[in-house]
Length: 147
Image (tube, rainbow, N blue to C red; front, side, top):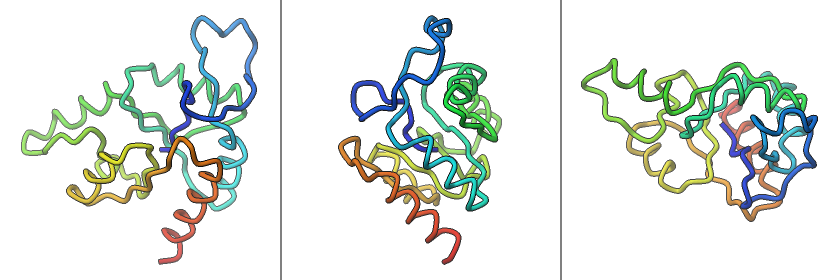
């Protein structure tokens, strides 16, 4: 998962959807996301969105499709909680991509990196201020694909 939800913390792409969708989808996409997703697909990557928000997976998919981005799946907080509840002995980190078969998790939270070390999943943390964040993600993907 890559921090795509731009809010007011990231440099953003121009709105990629028709104003009709504004009541449901009103958030810009982080600048460079569209190009990065295409490059990741060329590397054969399967793109998943893993968010701690309660946004509907359908709305997240629709929002991304408005920008031409197709994802394999969406894990929101509801899905995360339901999955981890099924495993009573399982600690509940804020995110656990390993539990969903995700090999590399991209986040903007240092706390998620710490959880990654504790629970054994790979995390690359990118800063909201980093304008070259997409290059950092690509480098991490290449390292993951060619250990």
